[in-house]
Length: 363
Image: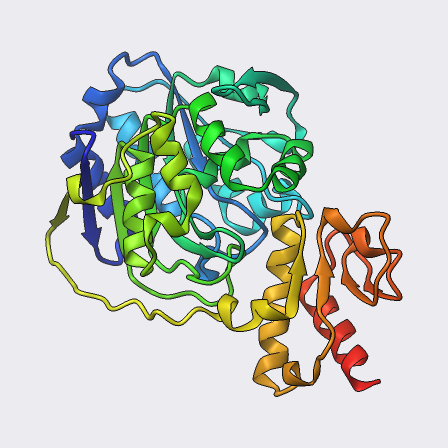
C-alpha cells in the first residue's frame, strides 16, 4: 500500500473483510519486525453498542488480531479512553471488548487510568498517555461519523482517546481544531482501518446509524479525513483541523491526489446532505463546551424539535466552560450552575436535558 491509497471493501462479514483488506494492503510488510508492539486504537467513546453508530465494531479488531497472529506478530495491545463523562470500563464491557480481549488473549489499556507525559507537538505542549510509549506500530481503528462541533470525526480526532481527561477538557478551551491537528504531530499513526459500517453522521455518540457496511484501509490520516469530508458533503475548509494537520506535515488534505480503490463489488450509496445538528444548533450559545455535554444537548434539542416544542423555546441555551462563574437565564451543565435555570450534571444526559428543557418550555 502507498501513502496516497485508500482501499475499500463492502459487505457484512466484517472480520473476513478486514483480514482481506490487510492482506491487500500488505500490512505485515509495513510493520516489519515481528517483535514490534502493535497498538490498536478503536473508538470506544461511550458505552454504546457499535450498531448504534458511535463505536468501533469488535469484529474489525478481531480481524486485525487474527491477521497479526497468522503473520507471526507476537506482541499486540489495545488502548483507548472514553470521553469525559463516561467510564472506559463500561464501554469496554458494552461494546464487546472484554470478550474480545479474553478470546484473543490481548491486553487492554484504559487510558483514563493512565499516567501522562508532556510532549512538544510542533510548538504546542500537550499531555499524552504513558501507554502510547509502549507502542512501536499504531493501528488506528476509528468510526467514520459526524460530530456536532467539528462536523466530522474519523482518523485524526480519534487520537483524543490517547490523552488524559484533563487534556480533553483543555482541548475544548483551546478550540478543538488546533490541538487536534498538533496532537497528530505528537502521536504518529502508522496504519488506519476505518469502520464505515453504520456510523452516525450527525452525532459522535451514535443513535442514528446510517448503514453502509464498508471498511477502509489507509496510511494517511489526513487524506482519510479529507475523504470523509467529501463523503459527508463538506469542503476540507469546513473542518479546519484537517487542513491544519496537512500544513503541519501530518499528511495530505488534497483529495484529488488520492488513489481510492474499491475491492470487490462497488455498491454506490447516497449519503443525505441534511444534518440534524445544523437544524437545531441555532438555539445554542456554546463557549468551550466538552464533546459529551454538547453531544447530549443536540439530540435532546432534536427530540424537542420532533415534538414541535423547540419553536416554543425563545431563550438561547448557554453551554460550555466559558460560562463558569457567569450568570444568565438558561444553561446546560455544571459550568452554568450560576444561571437562573440550568440542567445539572457533568455532563447531564440526553434525557435529563430533554426533560429539563421540556419543563422549562412548559412554564
